[in-house]
Each structure stands twice: as structure tokens, then as C-alpha cells.
Image (cartoon, rainbow, N blue to C red; front, top):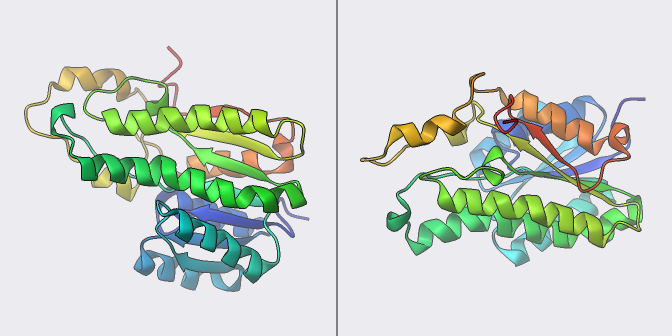
Amino acid sequence: MTKFEGKVALITGAASGVGRATARQMIDEGAKVFGIDINKEGLDLIAEELGANFKPAVCDISNREASHAAIAECVTTFGKLDIVANVAGVVKSHHVTDVDEATWRLIMGVNLDGMFWITQAAIPHLLETGGNIVNVASNAGFMGQAYTVPYCAAKGAVINMTRALAMEYIKTDLRINAIAPGGMNTGMTENYHVPEGIDYSLMQTYTGFRGMAEPESAANAICWMASDEAARCTGSILSVDGGLTAA
């Protein structure tokens, strides 16, 4: 028996980066994966690679109706739901005075709203299976980082939302945890641009000492937290940041 034999997992942000790496690993360990993303082309590519045990679905998770429909489609497709990995994320860098409403709503919509809507819709199904949720937070949820104020606000909210959810369901079998990675070599960071006129010395405190990680490092943590090996973990926030927040 492999780690996720007979399990059904829904993964957001499955078209690239950590979401894609998590889908690969869970399928390798026996799971069936319902992968959602706004990127249809990326989903099609990973679906071709992973085969029949991966079902892709295009979804804008920032929309409540779309998120609830995706959960319903997952359960209709595979018959149940055991694991939710809330991986989808977006980061942008701005001087705080230049952040417009559209940017704020995008960052909150993907990083926080979408995670909440997916979780809200998934909980009744996870209670039936004794399942669990793993949210992807960030070291930015623990640290004040210049030029990424909306992102830090969203990820800080993810951390406390995870703890609050865990407490609301502490008397059930449902487990709700999060991992908090540092910088990784993903499309999200490859497309990261800083604005003109910044003070680079303010960024030194969160660049770390061990360089960028590969997405598989975060996927490993997600898969461990989602497995029975982490049965005693709920309300936990696992740092996977190369010691960035240890000081």
C-alpha cells in the first residue's frame, strides 16, 4: 500500500510549481487528483503527463460559486474527497502607496478568498471521510516584508485562518494544517519584479542564506502533512523556509 492509496485529493494551482509537484507526488503515492487552476494550457500539459488519475478543471477560485462548483465536480468525478491542498498563489511587489484596488483584490482573491471558498465547500465532504486540508502559507505570513504588504497581509491571514479552522473542528477527525515555504524556483517568483526606487537593504532580512528551493521541497511537506504520518497534527504551521524565520 502506498501513502495515498484509495485517496482523492483536490489541489489548487495544479498547473505549475508547487501544485504540479504535489499532484505528481500524490499520484505516484496512489491518489487520484482533481487539479484546478486558471491556466488551462498548463493543466492540459500536466493532465497529459499524469494520465487517468488526474482530472483537470479550469477554475477562478476567487469566485465563491466557481470554487463550490469545483468541489462538487471533484466529488461527482471521483465519488468522494479526502484531501484538499490549497496551493494557488500570486505575489506582486509595489510601493504600498502605488497599490491599486485591482491589485489588492487579485492578491487577496487568490491567496485568501479562494482558499476560504474552497475550504468552505470541501469541509462537509472531508468530515465524511475523516480527511484533511493543507494550506500553503509563506514565510511572508510571519515576517514584515517591505514592498509586498498585500501579500504579507494575505499570508498572515492564511496562518491564523488555518488555526481558527482547526479549532472549530477540533472535536472531529478533520485535520487542518499549513506549510510556510520560503522562496522557491517557480513561475510565480520567476515573474517577480520589484518597482523602481526601492531600498534593497530592506529586503536583505528575507532573502535568506540557503538560496531558492525547488517546488518539490514544499510538495514533500504538503504530502507528509496530508498523510497519516501526520495524524497528530492539526492547527500546525510547518516552516519549510531554510531557516529564514528561525531568528
